[in-house]
Length: 60
Image 1: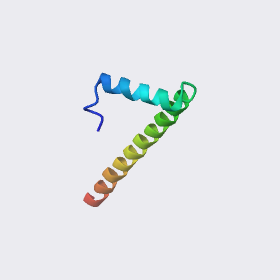
Image 2: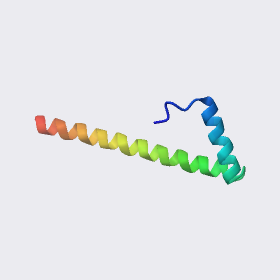
Image 3: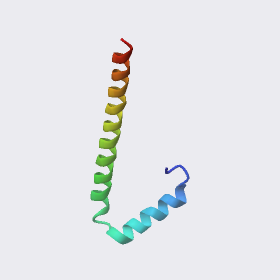
């Protein structure tokens, strides 16, 4: 999804976010985004693990 965004694109996104939200809100938004992303990755990993276990049970 973000594979085609280079360094200039990231800088542009950060500048726009700085203009919209201001410097005081950016750390809070970054933490919220990071925790949401971490939660999503953990959920996806759990789903993959459950799927693998389910396939093993079907084989046995």
